Image (cartoon, rainbow, N blue to C red; front, side, top):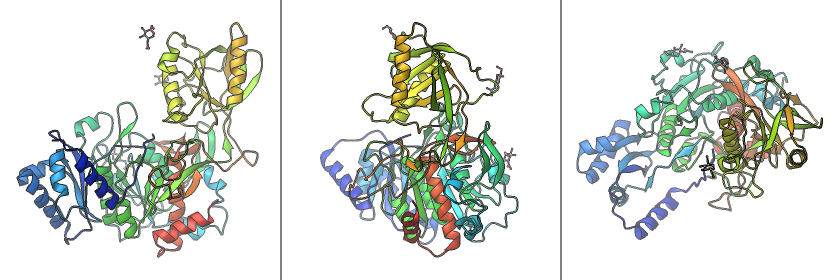
Length: 563
Ligand SMILES: *[C@@H]1O[C@H](CO)[C@@H](O)[C@H](O)[C@H]1NC(C)=O
Ligand SMILES: *[C@@H]1O[C@H](CO)[C@@H](O)[C@H](O)[C@H]1NC(C)=O
Ligand SMILES: *[C@@H]1O[C@H](CO)[C@@H](O)[C@H](O)[C@H]1NC(C)=O
């Protein structure tokens, strides 16, 4: 996760385009995906809008057949425009038409609970709080743009729900592993958008449907609006009642991010704009986007103009300044903070010294037992660093570089984890400035320790002839002794990289070590992706309490009263 983002308004985009056209007089032969933006919808019926798109495009391509073949998505409800496969020349020709506001290449995107709600004092046992006043977000419709959803999770049970609000105009798009019954009174709509990607290719590592093969979207949707589920826990850690911020809100799923063979995600803003256009048509109240991407920000602008609040994750590229994405003034940009829960994990060195780090390591059926193993120093644990170091069966000490890297410590940790696991290592101790990045590193013990602790361990390794260490499973503790809230180190920092005058992020919400639904069970993840749906949930409660408040009023209320 982590993509630099720039959100330029239509005017700035048009200027940028002119600039490119002046200085790049190249003849483009190969085609790529472009987004053509035409502003407000001027024709009444969506079919007429689509026809006008084809008229325009066939002017440039020469025939209606070519126009049909090149068209990927039409935007026809909330704003007018389309995404099509074009050569650079064709894109330039289109940009010269008077109705065309901008033509931009489509850009790639990456995808950027139990305890956190109590920590925010939104405990549902407290009679007079926002949760109850907001009637658990009843009948508010939250659109979630993400990797899809796993409808069988208990968090999406529609037991006790009334009929779908009559104003809802969305649909349940069927596909691979997804039929009409997968939509319910809880998941009231579900759609998916390929953004012009090869469907056969997508099917190799994902479902060609709203079903979530990745788990990111299920996690974020359940954080925003998961129903109350008793006894949810992640292998005994973080046990408690799992629920979303607005447990009775309805969910509309817009899948635009696709799982790749390596377990990452792929997607583009052509698909995102199609989702936003449909979400306006369908009647969502709030759109929650836990994505790090370069959005052609006119999509969010049209949504906000129509009274829909847009909540974006700030990105996970901290702690350096100006690493923020999604900084348009009209959206809510959410940073991630730590909550008052931690997962202490005891490491015992061969000299009996005990050291405490943070991990999500649990003693599963298949996990290796906690025994003393050889301990080696793997430097930064890049492939080069580990070349020659035999890590098989050993616990490896890895460290972030002394100076910050462009991708941030999270990327370094991911790579180190991968390399140690591929080398057959049986544990990883990761040294960094903070210990906030707790997430899916569970197939092998992976303990985060701070710099001072790292120094102690390194000293021990260098002194001993055959250093060993033992890692115990993590425990889960909560309470006042933990320093919180504190902005998590990975959370992207402001101000806006494009316009330093825009002071962002707008608010911080819990995003470190958040437990929420994944598939049929619960899992802990960290990121601003986890923080954004917390704010979405609170907005839904406020919206239920004050149905007529505008996005600006809701945003103002949340940033002036949050702390
Ligand atoms: C969803 O649809 C699939 C495919 O038809 C079906 O196997 C599954 O049981 C459905 N799940 C729910 C919750 O309805
Ligand atoms: C545990 O190990 C067994 C035997 O090696 C294997 O069949 C099973 O899939 C493993 N389970 C998990 C959750 O990895
Ligand atoms: C490891 O180092 C050897 C010798 O320097 C080199 O030939 C080999 O390609 C390296 N392997 C990797 C995975 O970098």
